[in-house]
Image 1 (tube, each protein chain N blue to C red):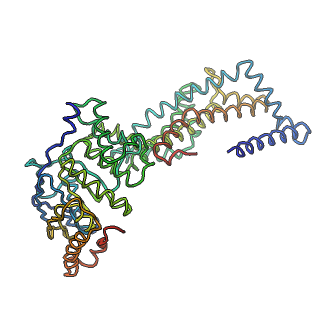
Image 2 (cartoon, helix red, strand yellow):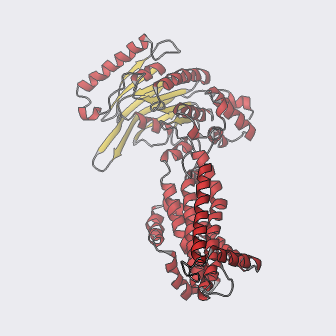
Length: 282
Length: 257
């Protein structure tokens, strides 16, 4: 397979989450992390899953990734039932999960080395392409510990993009970064999404971040983890996290959310983790 | 940096001069505490007649053989101990217990089992190395963040590939420190074995030390002790420093001095 062919966009997947339930048994209690969750995600759609911790959004992401198994229900990718991890669905974790024993280029090459039908120099060219895409041309041979938090997540993004997946699964990837770095990454991720045309499922507890990035924001509530509401976001792209219209939209969603919290749907004990209402500062 | 080197050199020079003076001026018994110049004279002679080199060679050979066997057996055992509950509850417990046993305690057993032979030496060195290598490897694998394996799985890594390309390199800092610890234990146990097990097939540094005592040749005892220290330091520099430098460069923190 030639390198041009390799770099062509894979057709993004359509995901169908069907009636997923997941129960965790701990010593003292049984937690219904997900309770009959269904969700349709279109080809190339950018969907943000929002909710307080314990609402099962990360669990759902892991099930779509194939890293965890659902107790009930199934997830279909283009009609195919997901039974385990696959190169068509790449994951970006909150902790960058880069391998410290490899340099930046070798980290991005890791997934490519497992991809058949490529020559070594082709793999290197592909890795370089994606590192260029995330703006790290000058750090090919840097060690991971030498990079800033934002740069580490850029490497992780390049590593996730490199095998050319149909779906990108992102689990609070910017949660640990400072506000300025995050704003830059919001711009970059929108640009890359437009360019590489992936289906993206993005988990966050930051409503404003979700509104900034998503075509659709899916609101979860915990105990048991359920989908509460879905909000299509029609604001023009590229979006700026600080724009007024965006703030209005996220305000609306937050209002609804607080309503759920006050209704006693979510008890005080369950809402320990407050929502991050302010997209910029934390 | 420069002042540190100077102060180190000054300290050792002062020590040597004071020692030499104390010995020459008769402040201490020169038979019991020979002057540095006596020790130097012995070392010079032992180098010339080749007895030092041949003893060192015998010792280092035994050490390397026993140590390598300890590593070759200990590494995989540590891996399976970390991976399988059954091994953890059996081999793991055994290693934990025997690791606390000072290796010189194996000497009586070794003499009874193998007699005054090379096998007895070998046995003591392997016993001194093996358990600490198992424990270090197990700890290393166990402390790997699970996210590494998860990330590797999403990229299509499975089974053996994950072990070779993720688990093993991820536990490298622990394995290297375990190998270093194993080396220290092997070195100690070999010296104990050589001092206690008198054999005719090879005359090692421990024997040289032992016969120095029998002959009341304290300059020989101290000279050989000095050589043992030097070999230990050299091994550290040659065998482990390159690994530690690599770890320091890649991981950023571990293995630094």
